Length: 160
Image (cartoon, rainbow, N blue to C red; front, top):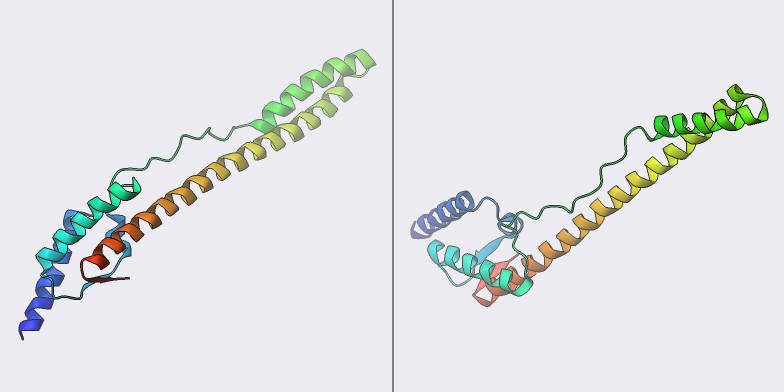
């Protein structure tokens, strides 16, 4: 019966801790079990101290908003804009050659093709930047979690 109360008290304390600190990513990714019969209050204190130690060791704090790096917005209308420019250049070239309409049509098609290619290249660059940021952030989070786990293990907890 006493153990049952202790388990309920631990669950209540952990629930309260999760309400107080909803932004802690590490608390959502780790399971911590007190091996030495630590009280819920002691466990909460140890987790808080270990989190502070992990921030100090890794330089990463999951509670701080990690804003993604600014990325250039993907260009809009690259195909239309390229087509319009190509048509203008093609019309001038076609006028010199004797057929402005044919030159404009060729220029518009070429300009649209080049504008679309440029737009896709820029979209790929933005996606690559976002992927690199997410990968770096995941690595920082993993290092932070390892540091918290090492600290809690040293204090007599099983951490998974």
